[in-house]
Image (cartoon, rainbow, N blue to C red):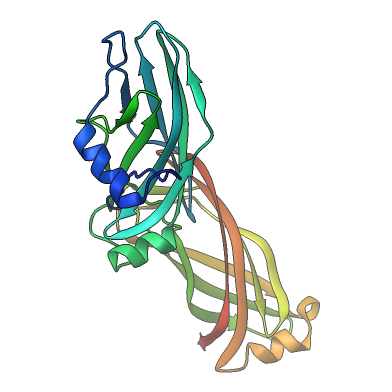
Length: 284
């Protein structure tokens, strides 16, 4: 992802005038001479899956004075490239007790589809960068604490490994039995190697079940690479019936291929479900 900006919307100010005031004001000082500060933590990944990522930042208001302050409003904006992908604001006043810190959680959810549109690619060469910028309105005045208030960092994307059926071959076939073999191409767009557990899959041909919950051994897919999982099935034609028998004599046939596996990521263990359908060519 790319960069994001934090911006406050308060009813007493228009957005341009508020931003100008923030830039001019810096930090205001309490009557006691002790300066309140606002800081923004580094982003943390609260949750990541194949659909996107949830980030958490802490907006911390530091009150070193001997009297209470009040956080009147804050707003934030997160950008990737030139696109705003998430934003928020609050005008609910919160007290900051004397000589304490107030921690306000900022939670931003970003979907992978929005990221890809922002960077113009579903497989960017490097993780996109996000930027978050924050501003806040206090009883002690407007301020935008700098440096350290803008946060920029690469944002990892968790890609769903591809599992695509290919090269369906009939090794032998009779009225009572057939042996078929096919491959599943496994593809990994992540920036880490994927070690898939045992793949459990099911196959339908011509709308009829052919094999259910058959398995292949664990597979490792290198960073940005591909590998192949091989399947070989012995089919009982008497059990499967004439529809499947007739389908195996065709040059191409409709199919459904689905299943599941699991693998470890830097953000914990993830379950991978896959499902595809279409037409496949039968080789002999």
